[in-house]
Image 1 (cartoon, rainbow, N blue to C red):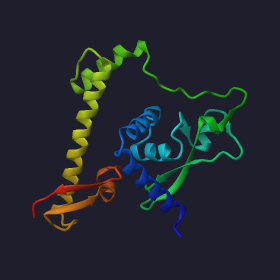
Image 2 (tube, rainbow, N blue to C red):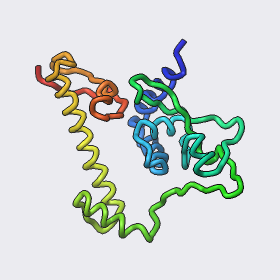
Image 3 (cartoon, helix red, strand yellow):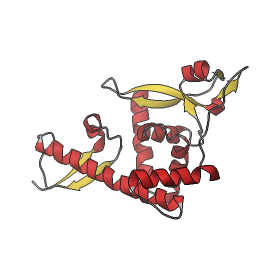
Length: 199
């Protein structure tokens, strides 16, 4: 019988595979990820898989000590995978909907792109990525495209580097699990990607 950690690893894999099948799944994921932008991809993926309607997540102690809120009895935590210790283990976060207020409690700030922020965001995108345009939505789309290309190049570099170090068998076509490259390169994509590599 698989352990809880193995079950959640399998859930992450199924969710990652399902995201790219239909554009509706991808846009649903992006909606969840946009509310949880401070979390890395792997955590966003796990939150989406278990609670796609989550708006603001934090650990139990943060809700209790920093936000002065309590986690409701019976609330089910959202399991996240932590591999910082060298092997996967679970830790849990709770959505704001799982919490209740006390006297002097704080509400989490949920960032939204309001009309007052359009100009500063547009200027930041132009300064950081050299992308200017009439609409922020077009700037964001172009930025996402650029970052996607960079991620693909990072993955290819990681695979080629592993080949040169003899960590992957040299073959004409090899399906490489990016999950195995995560520790050395900080890549958290949980897909299998086929690269055409020369022997």
